[in-house]
Image 1 (tube, rainbow, N blue to C red):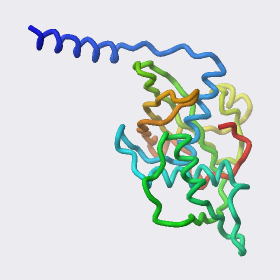
Image 2 (cartoon, rainbow, N blue to C red; image 1 turned 180 degrees about the vertical axis):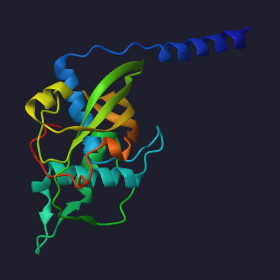
Image 3 (cartoon, one colour; image 1 turned 90 degrees about the vertical axis):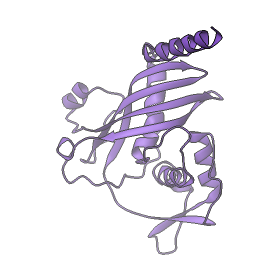
Image 4 (cartoon, one colour; image 1 turned 30 degrees about the horizontal axis):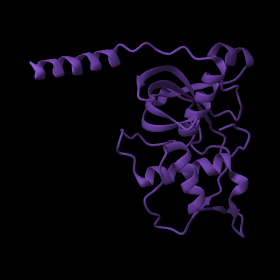
Length: 215
């Protein structure tokens, strides 16, 4: 009898998760989460499941994140063709967004080539479900523009069209995030790219460095 009750409790828990209603967010909460997820889409974070985050994924994210958002904090090379990030900078970025840092570094510092690029990538949260235990399931849309424009990342497709901004759907994503110390950390990230004909043809994959995004 005890086993049956335990099984029923498990089934009810799974069912409640599957039937969770999307949360209604305040505009400020929506904007904060748009920015949070944009950090990962603009850095082209690779797909990873819960418990399977690798050191390399964290390092790759941190280097791209620093290049895009903290460019002035990186040390330029003498020839100007690259910038250098320290392991401390990588660890700080990883801790902030993943709640953990790489277990080890194979390099004492990381050299990042300086490249020109005009692709502007960002995300918008579509739905957020409360799974309990400060864990949330998110789904959203990844957008990009190869025109060099800087559209309002919180606007709607209709508003972009009215403003003459060429914004394309680059993909979708689902994710698990966890609330931690008044912030969120990424626990799982599963992006799905759109078919090639759904995005801007010939768009560069190199993001432009910028420092005006609030993290």
